[in-house]
Length: 129
Image 1 (cartoon, one colour):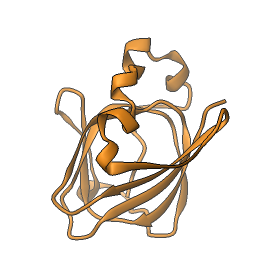
Image 2 (cartoon, rainbow, N blue to C red):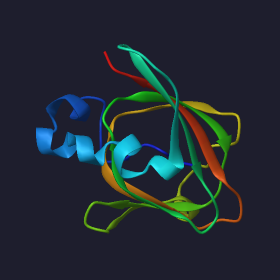
Image 3 (cartoon, rainbow, N blue to C red):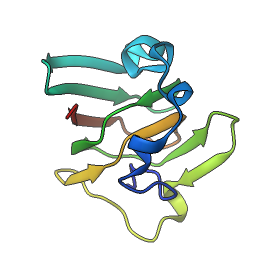
Image 4 (cartoon, rainbow, N blue to C red):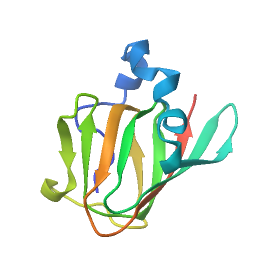
């Protein structure tokens, strides 16, 4: 399961226009039914993200790069803010397995649709520094 945007490198989160990081698009504001804050302080925010089969997460952002611990995988499609498909797990070269720990750069406005049969569940440790 590819979770980071293949068109984005690690520097993009620092150079993206401020409009990409509107507070109203923050995951906890725009999609709180799919994200739960487990811990937050001035250095990190830890989120528990869940997407049940058939659900689509509204357009939101993840402003900070993060370490992702994959607790559940499923087929999914990521869309950009205009509704264009930017990633489809069914056509990915490789699949991330449950239990994997991976790095993700910040994610610009996007939505995610779980098109599989199982829940997607990810613990994200967003690094604010």
